[in-house]
Length: 228
Image 1 (cartoon, rainbow, N blue to C red):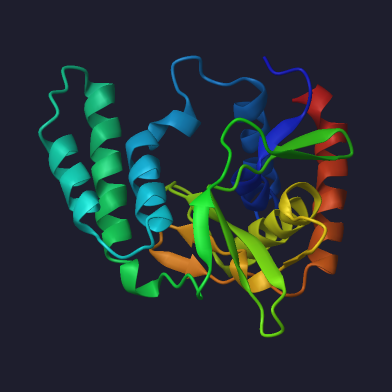
Image 2: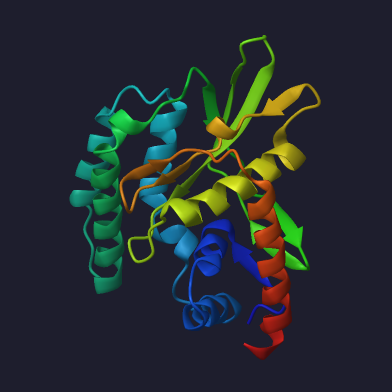
């Protein structure tokens, strides 16, 4: 059991846009996680391949094809392992159809840290951990910075509304944790790459109301946690 309220940024966005029953299920799954299932590791191979492709400039798709081929040839004795490998293959095949929609906008990508990266609202710990950090130059020579968040779940893909909340949180995180004193957070650099739906959601410019919604929902989560 996880005693203190916590949630990932993707799940928080789903929570905000879901009905009450689904909201309680999201919190229950988080508070009492299945010890045999690590959602963060489920799409490990796809996550690694997608990040490498983007960080290398989003130019050469051959490593994606090679990763698919390697996974296809990987022996799997357990049913659960076979399902996970097939899910990674499916994710990479879906991502391979999205390549024309990826636009670095002249920015330079780099790996985001996977060892840290959270925000706190009303005692709720939100795991943000953007997979890609991007930096570029603005029209007046200023340094622009942002981050991309990946999402792989086919069960609950993002839509415009939920992706907007993810982008808003990512922008707040970049502003507080990544941007230097002379760097400006660029909304267009804070995209959500939803592999499940095959959509690249652009960064949102209007974040104030979204952040108010997020803070209010975290207050609700904090109040509900003990009753879950």
